[in-house]
Amino acid sequence: MSHPSSAPRWDVRRPPSAEGSVFLVTGGNAGIGCFVAEQLAASGATVVLGSRSAARAEAALGSIRSRVPGARVRAVPLDLADPSSLGPSVDALGVDRLDAVVHNAGVALDDPPRQETRDGHELMFSTNHLGHFALTHWLMPLLSAAPAARVVTVGSFAAKTERLDLADLQSRHDYRPKRTYGRSKLAQMYFGLELDRRLRALGSTVTSVVAHPGGALDSLTPSRPPVHVRTTAARLRSAPAALFVQGKHAGAWPVVRAVLDPAVRGGQVWGPRFFGLRGQPRQETVWPHLADPSVAAALWEASCALTGVDPVGAPG
Image 1 (spheres, rainbow, N blue to C red):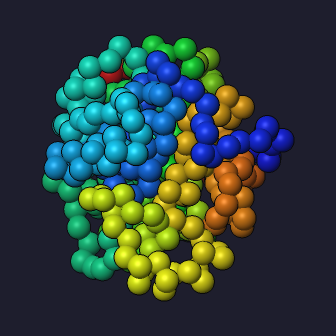
Image 2: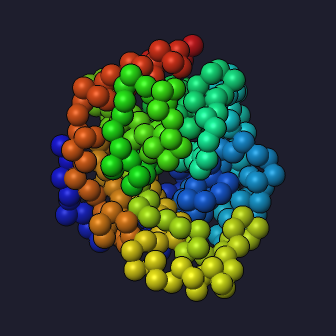
């Protein structure tokens, strides 16, 4: 089990240089992913945004370039709900190594009915967990080619009160949108920790870290037109909430630290300092239910069966 570290002071507004590094951010066209991409671009790295929408990706690229002069950013098409597209998307990266991937993209549905992908998988579990599970399989050769690559999986504070139902991973028998979303993010977090255990057992140079943004609201998020525009009314209405939660720009901080901080180690969980909801990023003690390797191993085997791939196996 990981325990809080005495890492040196970290300045969220002045990340260390990552000149020469290449990072992929899934869902980098909006929300927390766009701020992660912006902050990583400020480190001097080349940042690739994985996005289903070319138009939204172009808008995000324009926003990042306007905030980070000389930013090295570009986009590739990426649809995590379409397994057949993942290999071509990785080929489209056009790189011989990848220094980190941020598994950030996600779907959150608020209302019924339950939706499925073309492969018959529940949409949130498929996109948030299975898609990243399979994508890691395709990326592993590029990650292994880097000196010390990281896989950073973005979980959610909403997963803290959830528990996986291994007999109903697809929510066929108990579908409630918020619960299904929380469980899909919990599955991601189990994956991130189990991936690191398996990489260590193989002696890999790749490490896997989990991060979560805490409580991150649009109404507390600074404008990044045309990606996000915050109105004055929304800012004023949300002012009291700023005592407890934060904007998505701050929600990106634990993720960026998990990518860039040389003191970060595989198998750790990073989140905001104050009650896991807001503030500077810090290492957290692994949540008790996340520390159960038997659940993680069972989820891994089920995910292999559902996707037909193993992230630490050879690409086929």
